[in-house]
Image (cartoon, rainbow, N blue to C red; front, side, top):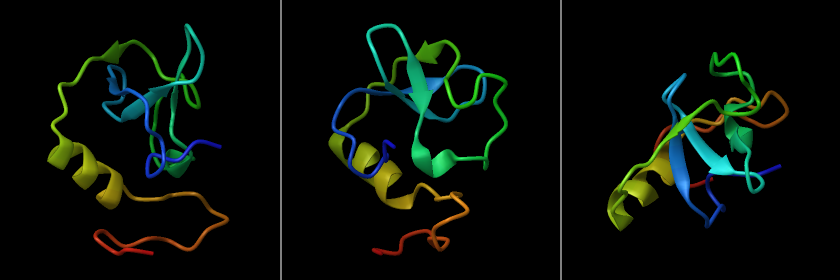
Length: 83
């Protein structure tokens, strides 16, 4: 399970659903664990083609901190909450 909050590699955007994606292997991009079933993507849990984003440090940290967690086995995080 890969969390957007702790992932340190390249984060791109799935061109199909516009949600963040990470490089799971040399050729495969996937959606983060927080997305679970909270998005609709025909490739889920994988990502479709990805778009390169030139994140600056602040925007990437904001994304990580505010991205909603839709996983059903964890309590829901409110936007901006630290825990």
